[in-house]
Image: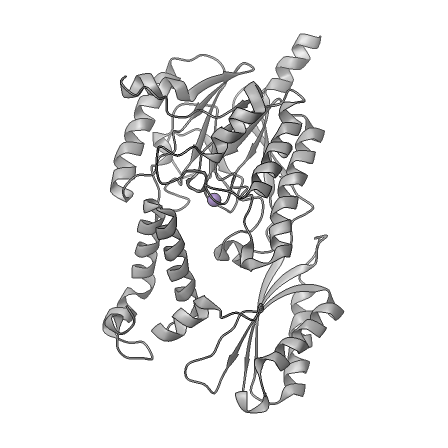
Length: 437
Ligand SMILES: [Mn+2]
């Protein structure tokens, strides 16, 4: 009886990805805490659900060199599981991988400190063998379940990624094919139907497993009919909290992880675990061409209307507020910000505000912290919308982090979305690309 129980427990797997511990969305302390709370609640829920195995599909940390607070949180959080005998298998993501291959990764630090119940395959020091030989290090057996971990690598560009990634999947498929029993694939990359821009492979290229536990995409996605002709069930649980700007655009989505029941015959059964700690995020634009009293009326009306749509969350809503006012009615943006602070207290929201002036050709935008809103600034110089500024800032981050895939993807997105406008000089400055580069 006991043995049977153990076997069944071993086939219940928790699948999470993109924890981004250490992230501080919008530079706000409250949002940094939200990210930590999402992780801690996940650990609590796992302790309660008691799966035998937890698979983490990359991006545990927000940066490859996390601060000590983040590292400590990860060690203590995962340590709570490994000490109870729950096995954690962890894949690297681009955020966990330093640009230099010689550097230690924070995932390796977790593996060193948490002992044998924390399993994170890495490149062997000796790489003299064939691809098949060193890929064997990435196929681990955990409580009767075979887990094939995709070796995350920072390749020079998209083409290289697809060629080498495809080759690895091919060789891994051949290794996995020969294994009997339940099998799981763990990988941090996007597959074609989900995110075309930077996809590494098509789902048909996935190894023949019972379940492919994926990471990298921050929103939830479960394989749909038509995604492939003969691929395993694959799914992305999405990030534990909204981290990037686009994540916040889907701010009313529930977040969490999956419980995957592999004990049944046939396809595994996926169960959603939704976190209670998720903070809802909404975006609101308020435009006032008249005086202060009009702005006040509009602000309260719009906030109340939008907040009435936010249901089923425990935390106060995070509101990205874009306020545009006619400058002649205001001595300084401070007046506007004080109004927002008062409304935030009364209505119970966590605000992030940008104020710009309708009657100024080059809007002087500022973030709520009182510093310049860099994205708004870049956008106004180029004469494009804020989103463009965001993309340029993300590109800066990607360059600083030495993340070639992300750089490629971002340059591609910018070119697609703004290339025509920039090259034709159809921006408000009229100078085109050369005027701001
Ligand atoms: Mn991520």
